[in-house]
Image (cartoon, rainbow, N blue to C red; front, side):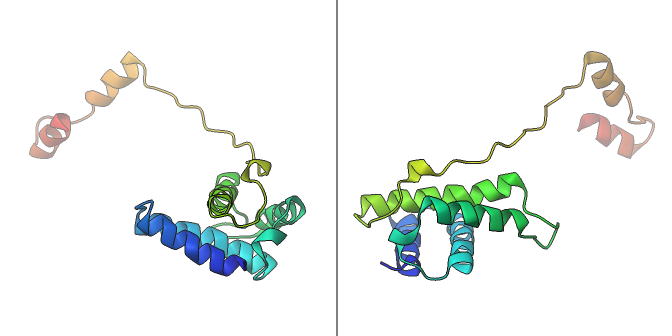
Length: 140
């Protein structure tokens, strides 16, 4: 089966059987279309580890309208869409690469910091309560 046909079936599956939002379906379509942009309308069975590795390199060098390269997190979204698509193919008996063979890139998450009591008190004491805007801000 050609990838575009299988992807269209997968998107229908997401809409009808999985009840995914239109935005989720649009995102998955976007990510999987990038695979087609890279590899062409290949057979699903032609998706192999070597093709995925080369696609990952292509994604790594692909820019977006906001930066010169896609972030690791965005690249992972592409891979997650591909893994889920391959799971769908396995369920439907379509010969394809095992989704377990696709690993995500490690992404360093920013460290979350919290305000201490002094910083919180200072922040809450900032509004000037002598005018209406300051009173409003103090209540917020």
